[in-house]
Amino acid sequence: MSPDPARGNAVFVSGGRNSALSGNGLAVGSMLTWAAGFPAAEVLLQSWPPVALLAARLALAVAFMVPLWLLIDGPRRVLNARWGHAMFVGGAGIGTGMFLIILAQKLTDPVTVAIIASCAPLSATLLELAAGERRLRWSFAAGVSLSIIGGLIATSTVAPAQLGLGAACAVASTALFCWASMATSRDFPELSQTGRTTITFVGGLITASLLMFGSHMLGQDIMPSTSFDPQQAGMLVIYALISMGLSQVLFVGSIGKLGVALASFHINIAPFYVMVIMVVMGDDWNWTRALGAGIVALAVVLAQDRKTQQPA
Figure: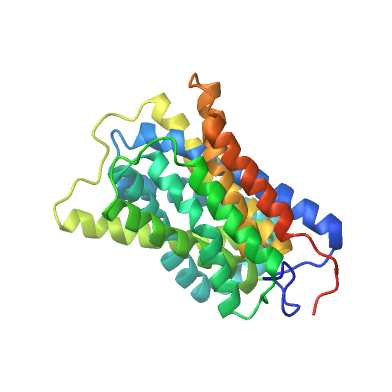
């Protein structure tokens, strides 16, 4: 599967080696910030119901990013944006996908949720093939295989607490996230990266609000079980603004340069980044996860090994 698009569209930015370097740099930054959300979510899920955490995460991100979007793109471009399509992409892909990943972590543990990285490149590749944006090439196929192997190695050191429904939620979340990220990068070319991310977050917030209302009508708890303290506030800022807002802006930028399939390779290194963060917080270093991260890095290089740079 070729790392070059099958046809030149708005998703991909042709710039040769410099474009690949900047695209990979954006993907690394995206995964580093995304990984920071796993420890934060562990703290918050001790007292927050998943639906409440989803709504709070999106509400804080939207409240911060909408004014920033207005400054970057201007009111006219904001008003004239494709709001209807954004509500569909954000509601179905972002809102539902985020709820499923939070629910998966609630039902299992961060390690099990990190296993979603193993199927992300495959899901993203199938999406691009279906859209006609990639062609078969052995180096990219080998890169996908190595990326999956590396992701499985990186997440194999601790046995998952529970599979079943939690694992199913994680897999479904991955597919929705890849689709929504590709649509966000492709379908709003008139907006900045911040604008593309923010408008779909608004759609996600609407879905989260509907889930909150439905949970309340069913008599379920929708409020945290403990008082909101400074520690929770700090964790929510990390979880909403850094792990979601900043991470998605960087990921959408990476997709614009690499395509969603190749950018998604980097998701498989996330367990290694989580481990690094946990080491800083006092946990032990794990060489197996480091090996898995190295294999994924090799997969990224292999998949981008072009002998010809010209798009078809």
